[in-house]
Length: 129
Image (cartoon, rainbow, N blue to C red; front, side, top):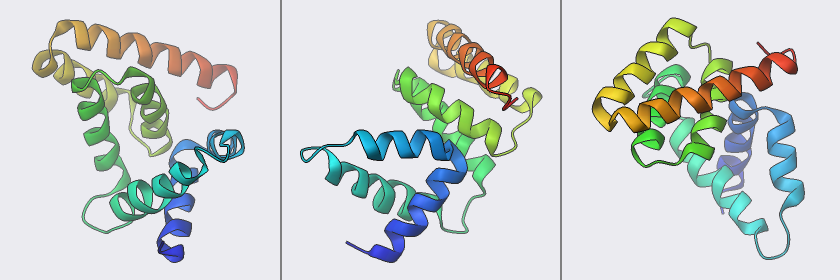
């Protein structure tokens, strides 16, 4: 394990998803699943999110499109919140979700808007929006 990459990955994961989410994920891991958190921090977040090739807004848009196309709506909601934290505006997010509806199909777009609405409601309740 590359400890430097794991730490930088965890830092960017916290920036995008929030401390509360990351703390809950790490604290709920047990002996069986704890190593997955290391993989997520080092590989997913450290390797894929810390280089200079794309900014965080671009990465968020890519993730939203891919997660919608794969019908991974739980993760879509998590990354929708992250996209807001990364500075995507309502207009940008709306345009991305319309594009998802066109290219992934109307049912995927309807579900993406539903999940996005729930995420926005939760963020409003927490004072994050």
